[in-house]
Length: 149
Image 1 (cartoon, one colour):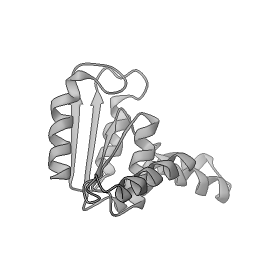
Image 2: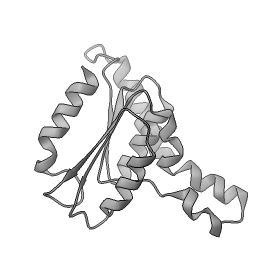
Image 3: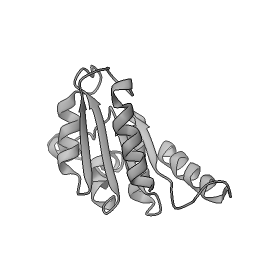
Image 4: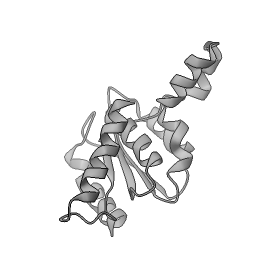
């Protein structure tokens, strides 16, 4: 929760900087940072959108059968980005994921993407591994331009 707070606070600081257009702030996160980015964007309606790289949700709802304690279940939902996906729309949700990612399988990212609302786009990258790779650069830059106008 503190890392999500950090992302939200960073957006607040940028909004107060006169050199930055406060209407053109997006959050980008990689791996676990992508999870925090998704949650932060869902919580702050002033942020223009999110780009998640090599990330996914935890699919908490599919795994909840093993959790009997309601407090524990509530905690797990609070850290699962999929809980927050419905709060991102109408802002842009972008995911980029390498087919060679050995940390977070492509299928997990695609499952999270399916649950997101429009507008959304998923880039399956043929190069790289876990995290940002040069094979993402063109799509990444294009999405930022579209997102921030």
